Image (cartoon, one colour):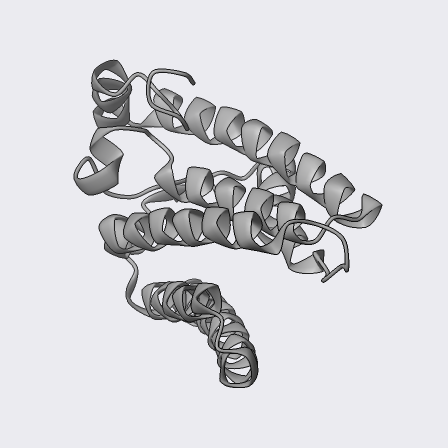
Length: 204
């Protein structure tokens, strides 16, 4: 009885913790938006809020990768960009425009993924609509675009290193995630056959 209760309650508690984190991140961005009026922050607030809500309402996975490296890579790729810091050098206008594009792509990806949202590789309903009709990982594409824009607008060796590390982690994350899904989900196998590109249409 106790074991069954823990199996149900622990995942819910974990989702609530993540939801609170993203709500906090949205609140921090909102305070900064009030002070600066930057449009990119407004999109960041919407994305973070949508992410928080999806952590609460998302579907329970029928299976989750038990490989520690899958968890480590997924969490590192998700949270490493939060270490990016403002810098005096860079091209703020160009970087801001690229960030705006990236945040828009990410927001559309989050909304399209809906209740199938997750961080680590897991078996949930395969989403094939919206931006997922063109590339298999629009949220990752949007995230990388956002990181690129931030680095361009805030050039420093720290930000460049974080940007490169994030790119490598995302590429590794995609590889691990797709390996798990292709081995365990026939619907995803059919999806991959129909949507050839992972991040950039007609390129990769």
